Image (cartoon, rainbow, N blue to C red; front, side, top):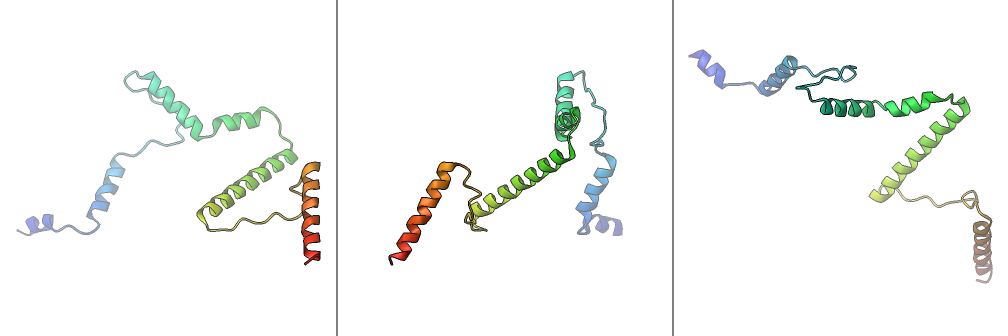
Length: 134
């Protein structure tokens, strides 16, 4: 009689424990396992799995990096540029979501060309002369 009621009443963690037991029985293969298994003689599927695993491990990037010696200065420069790009992307996303306001460009560093610089100076002169006549 008590055994019958015990099966009916299950604790609130019953499902979680059940899932944990399932995970213990069927463990996933190690993600960093170098072996690719061919099942039922299906080599195409094994090749796809290999490509996917190499892609996830950034194998191509690693090979390209190690192909030639990279000077420490260029390595620092590359990392800095990547960080700048990442920050710019984050700011762009924040601006699109409305979480941040776009910053106004100050100085003349963003004006690389001669034409842009002259345009900027002319605009400044106009604003200055307008403010003087008020």
